[in-house]
Length: 204
Image: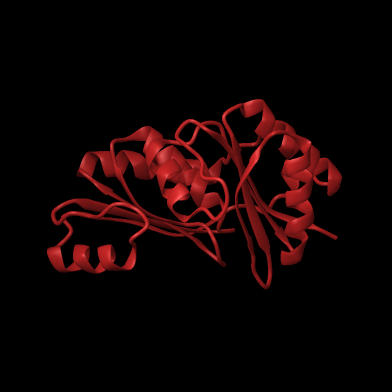
């Protein structure tokens, strides 16, 4: 039996998140404005069946697929929102699931660090080369949640809400992690949006 862990629909990928996803994509990279669906299931190998169903249901493109020991995840995207929504609808129906069956998102940790020191910023920049870099003196917001896939939705909503820099988005593994930076007021506004997103993720 396939268990639905994460099911998150994004209506329009924001520019930084789209480019970040494209930089690590193993499949067809998305572009800003694309609609996107992130699905995570267990057991891990079941993601191949889920992916097959989603791709055959509409004209969506496969962004990436990852099979881990406990669960598997896949991401699809398309310029037309209706294609992504249709693939998601058929996908859920085929595994006899509903969006309400997905696991509740649990926030493990969040914090804002103001006035980053140069040493701290350099260390983080060396660790996270997928996105942009933190500059000394900026504020940094960090967020950790599970299941991991929800963190992508949080990142997109944070970028929508304020003028921030997307430093790192890790949506694979036991926990999802988000790191953003920017001016203090912008980071605080983005943090509120990200936390709100995890407390009430999209249901499409």
